Image 1 (tube, rainbow over the protein chains, first blue to last red):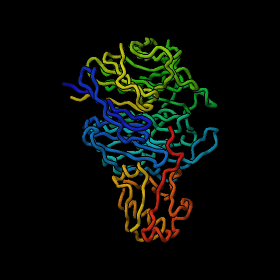
Image 2: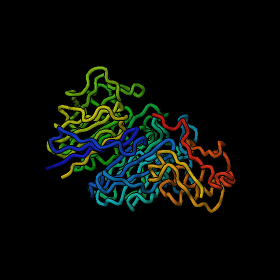
Image 3: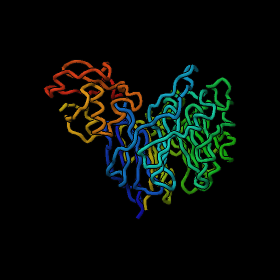
Image 4: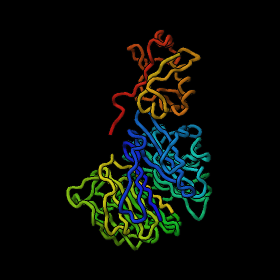
Length: 371
Length: 99
């Protein structure tokens, strides 16, 4: 019988939620690493019991934890993230130069085929890789070094590399996104990179159509169509059908197109999900009604999904790494809130129920579908 | 033997007791931290920066009711710490646990 394992990172620890394929009754394990911020944890597609977690603290900095048994036990591995060469400067909030300084790991993306290989997206923005199961890390410096780095600037959460998407059909191709720089693509396994932001329009930079400077919040891809990308930008929901070479807005009838998360149905590559948030200063749902919006047409035409979600006095946020899908039939959709709820839908979003509702603020949600 | 008291999170991370004892080659603040990181490699980077060896901003060093946080790494340890009469305390600053 299938099993689902939901990996939840929060402000004060990690939690592992498990259920059978019905997804009705859940076991809750945790907090793991109690008291530490867990920005992200994720399992290896090649070995589902191999998990990696980013553990950080204002006191004691960055740790990386690894589990070989699906999260039952953990061991600390390498935490030395050193920028290659002279780090240089990026823009500060006011546009002045500011030195690159490592702060934390936002996102860990295990290789699709090798459980010992994992990528780390960090703040200040850079991409690191480990080929020894997290023991040692080296920067893929072609990203910061390709030339536009001095024009990158922090978003409200810091200057973070938060999204890493690996092309399942082409191991040489990978996408990353940075707030606030934009989206970037490599076609040579991380050696060289180029911005892929044509079509993005952002009012917070002097040239709204500039090559870099865009606050991309999240990018999602369906495995069967690796050339099609969906993006939740600061404002605007976008799609690309040419591997990021150009983007078109697909916000359509969304009540607000600000938000953080975006994800794709496991079996329907044109069915996508977002959680509209009122604005960049009012980080909560419109009118206190928590709503997921679903498009079955790859954007533009959206329907509100509200059944089971709070429709009164709800003022939580859903952060960029806090939505995921399982691959069961029907597709399960999950998201976590800054209010500590993790909501699950076992029917592709038609109805929702909380798995847990009193965790610390949720930073990330990942899902593993286990045979 | 030098006695070191770690904050709770570093005890958990290092799988160490509330007080650890160290054999120290150089009886300085830096020598003590070198010995601590050699015995507990998982604490590398958690007390001070890997490369610059600068103390992390929200970590403090206390001993004999004195604040040694801002002393250079080659500062000699106080005699009661060297003799084992007093512990060396690594402390998380009161401001460090936001959220």
